[in-house]
Amino acid sequence: MAVPNTNTFSLWDVCTEIYGSHSAGMNLNQCFTDATGTFDSSYSGSKNSLLNFRNYQHTLGLVYDYDGNPYQPIRIGNQIWLNSDFHCTHLNNGFPIPRKDSIFIGDSSRSNSSDFNNSSFAYTQVWFYGSGYKEPFYYNAGVAANNAFGSLSITGWHVPTLNDLNILAANLGGANIAGGHLKYAIATDNHWQSPNTGADNSSGFTAQPMGMINNLIWNFYGQNMWCWLSDAPISGVYTAGLLSYNSAALNNTSALANYGLTVRLIKD
Image 1 (spheres, rainbow, N blue to C red):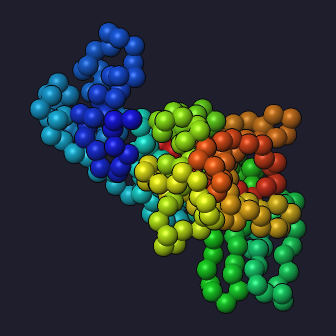
Image 2 (tube, rainbow, N blue to C red):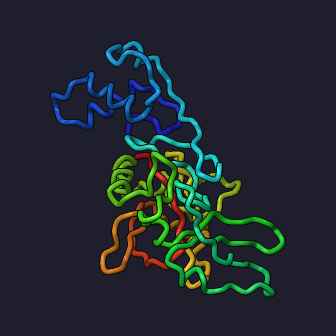
């Protein structure tokens, strides 16, 4: 795609892309309105001025979850995503998410309980003995797909749907190569195992392979990134996004409600 994937962008590039994605005959002024409404609601210049649009550069500011954790939004095509996994202990209305026992790595004196996988509404973490290092939060489907108590999100953002994932793939050249543009590729702090096929992180998404939790076992770390999608389950089976160390593809796969997966938010 022609428009850069970045947290700083020209509104002219945005409205040009919007215009190109609509059927012939759409009014350019409406595209300008869509661009400011979608990508910069604070824009106060004239929506009828081509000069303003060509010169105006917008930088996406940090957003914060209920706990005060900061996240950097990034623009990928006609979507805005966060470039790191969600890690909040509350829903967006302040409702606390029950925390279950962490997964303990390298400490035989600490046992992992089965509370997390038996809970319908919980999060957990992985804890490395002696390092104090914790991986991003893992949520079960009861939290990720919940709408009864509040939303696992930031106001104005949501857990993506399968349609959001399909649009993301299209914005990055198609599902067969999109995963490579999402995966972190720099050697420093890169958790992907070799060969990390196709990885260049040209989107700025910075996906890391945090694996998943099932029956209090931490699986596929370094190999896969799973993230919840919010679509309603079919026969009790949910859908998740999937990236793999040996593929450049962006896929979707099945997930059970008691799996612990990461969450990545997209702007409404």
